[in-house]
Amino acid sequence: MSLEFATRCIYGNKEKFEKDLTGTISFPIYQTATYAHPEVGQSTGFDYSRLQNPTRQQLEKVVASLEHGIDALAFSSGMAAITALMEIFKPGDHIITDADLYGGSIRLFDNINEKNGIEFTHIDTTSVDVAEYIKENTKAIFVETPTNPMMNVVDIRKVASVAKANNLLLIVDNTFLSPYFQNPLDLGADIVIHSGTKYLGGHNDTLAGFVVTNSQEISDKLRFIIKTVGSGLAPFDSWLILRGIKTLPIRMEKSQENAKAIVEYLLSEPKVKKVYYPGIEGTKGYEISKSQARGFGAMLTFEVESAALAKHILKHTKLIPFAESLGGVETLLTYPCTQTHADVPEEVRIKNGITDCVLRMSAGIEDSRDLIADLKYAIDSYDGYKALYI
Ligand SMILES: *Cc1c(COP(=O)(O)O)cnc(C)c1O
Image (cartoon, rainbow, N blue to C red):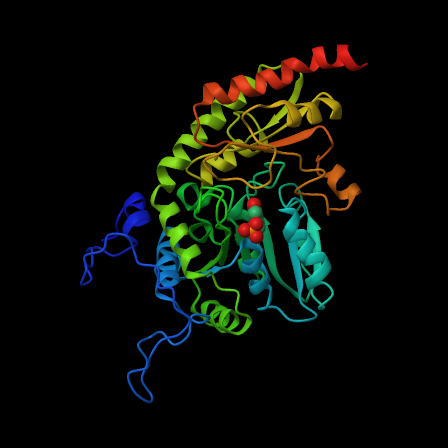
């Protein structure tokens, strides 16, 4: 018997609450670097916190259970997780990635991994035949869905079947939907990535990252890498993410509800030219989303009529901060072209639709009426502002 998702967010996959001597309800923070051995040749299972720490291990068990993996490894950030994962490849290997990815992932691939001899081809996996880009040295396909920031939806089952047929690993960055809405391992992926900084933590207060897998061989390689490179998550940060996960289901539901209300308002706003959200019926990603995910999430992107208006909105919302990151209880607005995607070459950025008129929003869990009023105030005040300054 396996427990339901919301219960596993609180207890992991243990079917019985295991009381320790104190009866503590909150899992303790084991703030220790090292552990005493019972005698020579024996270990408590914990030797040194770079390798294992009970608080980190509890978090890893919960995340593995939420993503239906056999193992999850917790790193000090999402980028630390992806960096460690890239160590399973070697010089001469080729990896196909989606062209519309988190800017930091592209920066890592094109500047660090490529320098170390790994080759990358970035393609729009939502519109081309991925199989055509496979070479003799191709080892993996790396996608993110919905993509950041354009909200394209990658058909995970379809890409997984190409990967399987060609003996490639499929890696899916599942940060945007969280395991509450989507489980890529069930759809054929081999490895799932999370920036735990986002929905898993959920409070814009802690950096964390995860690699989850259902392969023992990959898990063994990653356990060797984490103990060697030393980028595992600290005990206190592990505890903060454990605490965040307890409310993941209710946060995901509320922030999705807010995103839907904001999308509805933006679609009715004449100064907004386009809204990108997979939950808009009739759009390319809608049907695929419905077939592979349990929800559309709370991330949305919209294009306004001019760059001047985009900048005006960022400066004139009273409540919603102009800040990077996403997935927290606070609604945030960002400007991908100068912030999250500043390091993506301009021609690639424009080709992907990330113009200077595009804004990205992460809906939080406030009252949506306040959020819409704030956005409306920022948009409506633009005409008066123009009259004043032009
Ligand atoms: C934020 C993010 C990352 C990087 O995670 P950090 O925790 O900021 O290092 C990777 N992928 C996606 C989709 C992200 O949103």
